[in-house]
View 1 (cartoon, one colour):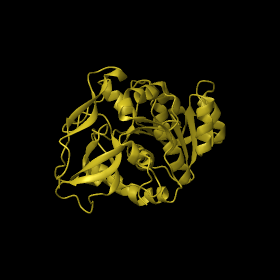
View 2 (cartoon, rainbow, N blue to C red):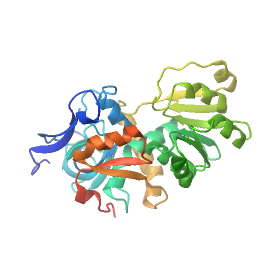
View 3 (cartoon, rainbow, N blue to C red):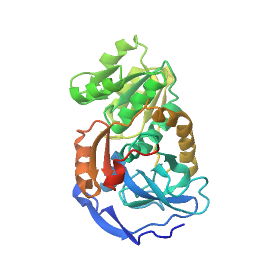
View 4 (cartoon, one colour):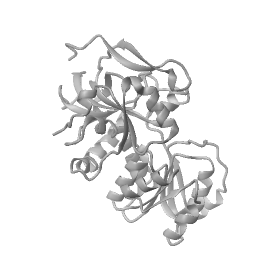
Length: 344
């Protein structure tokens, strides 16, 4: 059903490869959902590091995806394509996208929509999908983190990091993080990290090795790359797993593979945006089963650091690049809707 939809919408497009000022507010035709898709009237959209990379020309959208930035939204379903299952018009959802979130309306795959947890605002809900999909898949599926094990998160104060701290602690792991200031370290420890290491002042391997009685850490989630890879290999416990999800300092590395063999280590990584819908729908189902009940009970919550308007997308990107935030950055697209509790 697409009756009553506007012909055009406001959205933020990338005018050309470059800095935050290449983001501009424009008017475009309002999209329509296809088979297995819904159209969401977007109340809020999450801002993520991949959006910055796309703006810089380093992370293009996959074939068939919207060229607009934005990988997660929350809002109200206003149109249904064929074969969308039990989703209904008027339902408030949050959804993982392959692009198109910086807009008043966005098309989402039905299998990647999840209900807004009770009591959360749509701003908070918009901070969930990209982060939770990423953490669940990389920490708990690829990294196979188990209760009683240790997890080290590089970039602990990021949206991914603050969520991973809470989830790992909730499921029974010990958590260590690295972060770039005393304020960020305090925030990570307040969320449940046992020890946050200020990498500007301390050598994280020297701090953390004694805290594990010399055995090292079981799982590492890394967004930094470069020399951290070799350093992490030295810190990892036998049969440890290391998962790369970004390379803020560069992806080219050099280290001694003998340590990997002797300790039977697993070095892996993933991207999510270009994976098949079926794969991402599998992650969505796991989140609905294992994580959504915890959100509904208030045992997990997305820390939102700042909220900008849609027309303030350049300012949101400047904050992301300056790395002054602790938690998530969100665009309030429909400002009235975005601040209201949903899912009750």
